[in-house]
Structures are given as C-alpha cells and as structure tokens.
Amino acid sequence: MSTRAFDFADVDDLYQEIILDHYRSPRNQEKLAEVDLEAQGMNPFCGDEVVIQIKLIDGLVDAVSFKGAGCSISQASASILTDAIKGKTLHEAEVLYLSFRDMMYRKSSSEEEMDELGEAGALAGVRKFPIRVKCALLAWATLSDAIGKHPKE
Image (cartoon, rainbow, N blue to C red; front, side):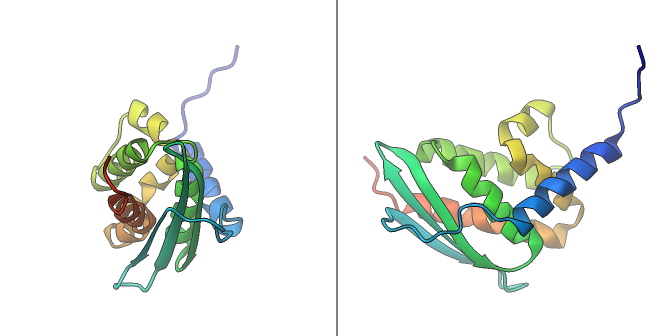
C-alpha cells in the first residue's frame, strides 16, 4: 500500500477550482418571479455590488438568486451562498452566515467548521488578503440584511 504525505497545495488547488468554477459558471442568477426577501449590498472600496432575492415556502428557502457585478471573489462567493442556503430555514441560513463571517476573520478553522461550511470553506484562503475579505463577505452580509427584513413570528 502506497502512502503519500498530505499536500496542502492539493487542497489549495481544489479550493481555487471551486472558486473559479462558481465565478465562470455562477449558479442561481435568474431573477425570481416571486420574491419574499430582497436586499442589495455594495462594497464602497472596490465597487462590488450584489442583490440577493429569496423565495420561501413553508419556512424554507425554496429559491434564491443573485445579480451582481464585481471581482471574481465577490461573485463566486455569491454563487456559493445561493447553493448553500437552499432548503434551509432563515435561522439556519443566518447561522451559516455567522459561521462564514467568523471563518473569514480567523487565522484557521477546524475541520468540523470547514465541513459545516461546505463549498463556502473554499474561500478561507481569501483571509490571507485582508483587503479581499470584504469581497468574500459582501453577499453573505447582504443575505443577513435580507433575513433581517423578515417579520419575526
């Protein structure tokens, strides 16, 4: 049986592939016919923009879309977000946002935290570039703004 040392470069390459895939082929960009929640976000430092739309059915995110313009990090992050919150409650989506935000401001994350974030964990490398953290967080903060508009039951 052959063993090979774990190569962090392989993980970085995989993460880069995920980010590039979401940037080149963004998911969920169609305008929703019916919208329950919507918010717009902008990064004044670089001009990135995003609009998040959410359709709820029975308390779950049934459909979510984004429209935006900006750098590859902000647009890939928005695409990843839309895949990540489908089928979740607004509370679960907010918890995911908080986990993502926390990951972006820490130097490292546990394997469990990375598993919880799924593809969003691919953006962890962005935290090495503090000026780009706002790019990665834009869609997520906009999601939180949209959730904040939902009437509390």
